[in-house]
Length: 389
Image 1 (tube, rainbow, N blue to C red):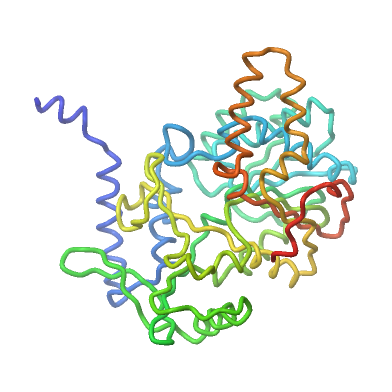
Image 2 (image 1 turned 90 degrees about the horizontal axis):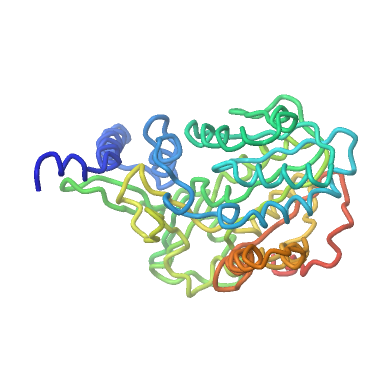
């Protein structure tokens, strides 16, 4: 291979990963040689200029690291638009806030459907911390009609004024930093990241009182004793994040769609290594110390935790269901039946299988509706799993 060929085949993202590794090691050294897993995630995923969500690599879609439901089919956004329409109709000047809008595909499909239905909405806010994702969103959404495009407002921080309407968070919570813990000899250890013999390593430390008490409380609630070596995740600071999000809503509903479980399932004794997962170029693996800054790292959502923090804020859990039942209730199958073109109908049928089938996204992904100062009545037919929380 010639030098020219080597340059052509060289992946610049690997240079970025080496830079992230170098900076991370320096950071660990400033922390006496050990950082918590939560701090590690915050560094490699969100640190400006270095982290996965602030660097420029393509993340979402078939040429990225993972694929989300809106990328699979426009039917997902259409279905969500069907579900939020009756809520928007409660208000004279409702707005929508989408947290972390990815490529902008979900926003595009929702607004297109709302326009087709002539549903009134005042603003579509997008809270986006990733500069390169914001650019992708702006490029895609520029194809909307000017009247609709003018309703879009990008936010890089929490707005001062709250809205009436809807908040949407699709695959957001799984990307939030999390703590990893392990139990051994009846004690709880917090897993962190250290550096030894020129290698980044996972290293446990005896957990502080807050983490130990939280793990003990979970074990008591679900009626099990975590055996030696049991490893899992918990989002200790999740309540702070949620209070920030719900403060943006004066009255209306919040839709959270993500992969996850009820607490009883989340901490099942057979799930011995937790639910952390990494995605690099659409390949899933469990090594967070590889591909630093150029791979996605996430963990499943404890939907019982989401329900708990909502309850603490006097916010009602409207329903908790599978993505499959949520989309079927939104009449996603009826959309396909109405299509006349047989080629298009076949393509949409294949797409909807990925969204609905249990071994695809149908049962793995869940949807939770939270209501604040509103009681929508258009979800009576949905298969509700709140009893599992």
